[in-house]
Length: 109
Image (cartoon, rainbow, N blue to C red; front, side):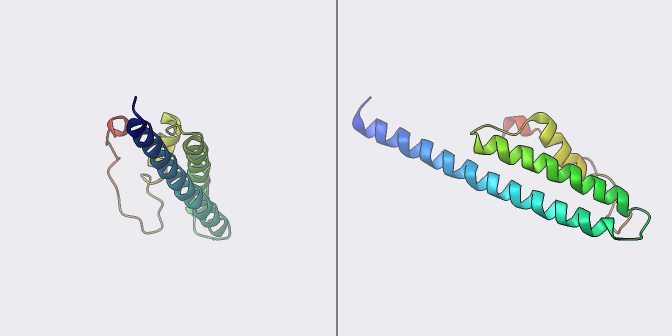
């Protein structure tokens, strides 16, 4: 490999590392938001609030797992991706419209 090829490869690896770090930071932020939402729902008297809080905690855990994987330079596990999708697909009884399950193939992306 020439020195130009080496420099290009290093630049691409650095770019990938930075992208993964940004995605990990975003996942950690989403986890923090979900956990804060769960704490709010814990204090609500609405019948569906406890279920919503549990779903938010599941999302927070999955987002933290995803952040950890991304920081290690890996893709989040299938279980984490499924938990993240599932956290937004159930009716929460607090005004969320009925949603169709997300059937996108994330393996190809």
